[in-house]
Image (cartoon, rainbow, N blue to C red; front, side, top):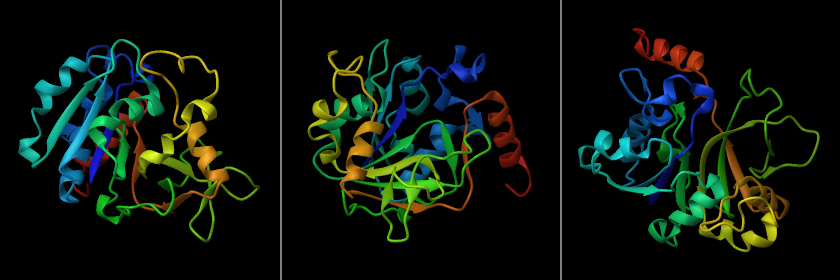
Length: 237
């Protein structure tokens, strides 16, 4: 199985820390956020990882090398000055990701979840990791039903998408019809979010999920990065 780590964002909410360092390379617990991911991916038996870059993207290869230190093969994809967003980023990386299901993880989250607990082959088009709603996102994103399916409709309590999921390339089938004439969709390469495609797949019952009740942090501000660093540096980890 291959994986992709989203690393192209500008990290505007993390400034001034991200004026000179891309967010996934910011350090928590003595190592860059992205290194935590690489270690967990390697431990789960994943051997190839795509890292898409844009803002300060030239820093990733010198910092991470070719991935050999973790037993990985890293592929860096420079998206240029304007990031392609999540959907466009995956579409642009498909020639490397291939035809089999692949794992996607946001480069700016931290979690203790074991990647090996994720299915290698989702039942539908996607399998998402959901977490309890953090203070900064109290309304959540999606509903996880008792049968394991995930939906966007209904009055049930919602959970927050953790930025971790297993996807089939088929999630992008017919993407133009789903996305419509949105800004960036007509660019070369296209720029668009994965969220409308996820909602489209949910409406067809083709998205499953699991609830991770362990530790998870969306490292979206300098304050949350400092809190995470303090937690990881403490004697209890």
